[in-house]
Amino acid sequence: MSARRSASASGAELLLDEIREQPAAWRRLLEREEEIAELGGRLAAADPVLVRIAAHGTSDHAAAYAMYALRLLCGWTAMRDSMSLPLSYGAAAAAPGELAIGLSQSGETPDVVAWLEAARAAGATAVAVTNADEGSSLARAADGVVSLSAGPERSIAATKTYTCTLAALALLGAHAAGGERGTALAASLRETADLAESALPALEAAVLPVADVLAGTERLYSIARGLELATAAEVALKLTEVAYLCAKALTATSMAHGPVAALDRAFPVWAVAADDDTLAGVREAVRRARDAGAPVIATGPAAAALEGAAFTLPTPAAPDPLLSPLLSVLPGQLFARALALAKGIDPGAPRHLRKVTLAA
Image 1 (cartoon, rainbow, N blue to C red):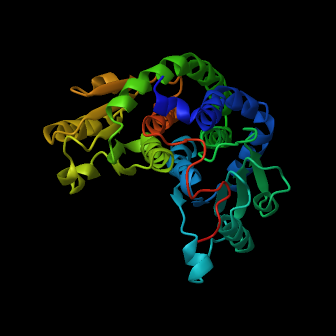
Image 2: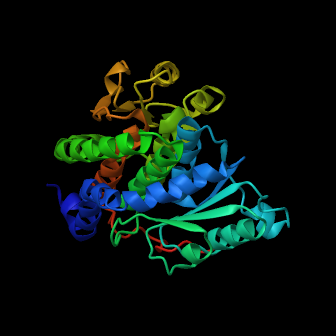
Image 3: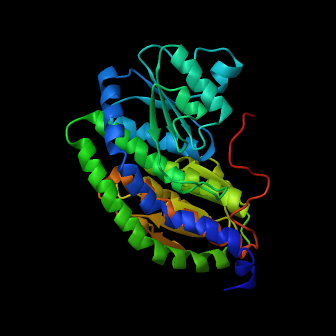
């Protein structure tokens, strides 16, 4: 272990412990499946004409995932809503017949709470998804609450609350879809937890040499398409807040519309490859990145399909494709920690940050 890597061991171990805890956290969430199923049934009966979701930071990436998951599971049109429109400009927060979902790990993010209160007052059904208890401000603003059961998250960088939020939203949507979908997805989540537990030790070791090679990196693009776009965004945020990179998430297709011009051998691309119809677009983006001289880090269940990558960090295929983002984010979480250590940064205590998000 290098001197730089050991210097930040205390904060690094705190973050690593919480990354490792994720499979157990998903299993704890499953202990609340009956509550989630009951809420899903109520939402299905309401049959919302539109789903609005509001969040910040990591939770906003979970909202991006929910746009896909709720559409694929329930056929609901979901959108990441603007909190500024109702709170700063006086626009209507929502309308009767709509569903408003507020995401906040702490349950105390002021503008998410205010937005959910406004949406509920406007006639929308309000749901809170939070790691806090039911006495939190967000829970009090809601008609229904999904408690993540992730346990205390002591590291500033959110890891287990992020993946628990993905799992909770998928379970909620699956139970709202009706039939056996909820039961089947719960079984798949149990299997996904087992897969993650098995994969983590090898991934922990695999990211270390990548971090050592890229320790001088200052910029990075994180790309994906579809469901995995949330993963790309979350990896970019983790690299920014933990390792102080200027990391930007892009759709694989949008990288070709201008951003590719910035690439060179000192500007890596983190590519998340899903084993679905989005793969072709990611492969083409990776080809463009290679042509520009950028080193590519290939991740995700279809990482092996990204030819010419400088590094490959594959993840297992999830038993249900909707759960793939729970696994594909793991290399990014671990790499952010490893890169911080390679740079001599304490990844457990990023500068200028505190846990509860306050209104801007």
